[in-house]
Length: 133
Image (cartoon, rainbow, N blue to C red; front, side):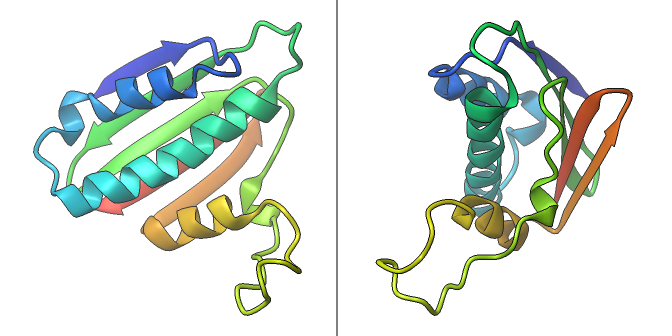
């Protein structure tokens, strides 16, 4: 199991994402699995680095990655409580010109992962994603 710790500063999402994707647990995964995990992790990391903390806050983001018959990635942060699973799915039938901005990343996250769970406990957002391998 890999355990990673970051200070999620706006503009550092790429470095965080790269560290997650370079974990040993992902080294033998198929390209399709890696691409799905990359898309999901990018959405989560972008949301944490952009919205979880105020600019003057010293935030944190802990990521645990485990490999069994699936890849499980657990993201924990102490930012503003936010359950992405409570967000409405965007109307994908509507013209992009008429759609509201946002929400598509979480929609894709749900589609790409086999399981997505959220809980807020002990002043922590805990978002867990799983992809069978």
